[in-house]
Length: 219
Image (cartoon, rainbow, N blue to C red):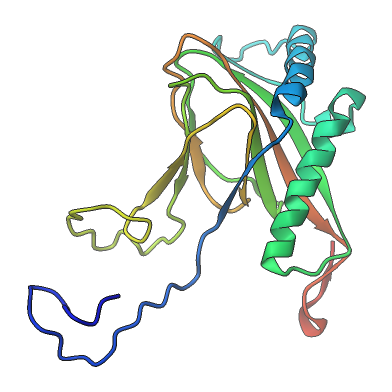
């Protein structure tokens, strides 16, 4: 923050001004190195599942698999990749834990016009999504401001920044994996392309003793 101009073009009466950014909301974006080879294995496996697991009554432009992909041999490489990414997040957060594991993992095939409403992933610590196929204009993932008081007063913003924005959009790309706290509300924009968007979502949870000595739980 500049100490030269407090606003309105006036000279600052302060000798120093400091910006302290508190309570950040983090999103971790990973680009997978061998994504092309990985997707060449994932896409046929997901297509086979869609043929084997039809969903009566589901929207014609959307399909979702069962949530046990991490337990299937054809998705073992992906499960290891997701756990590895989660480990990097926990390392960044300096979290101590006995073990982490995938509680659920499922594929999504979203065709033209499909969108998904704002939601969270309860009873998990981290959640993630990986894009195996993401054509242009197929719809981004949009994260919403988790602070309930943030919109009590909303003045007009001349230039939106990460500090003033109340949503944050991440563009889907084949080979991109995004991780975030499971409590963070997010939605998916409508697929405006003529091709399907294919993704794999997953949830991560802690196992073992969690917390400080006087506030410890066993998960």
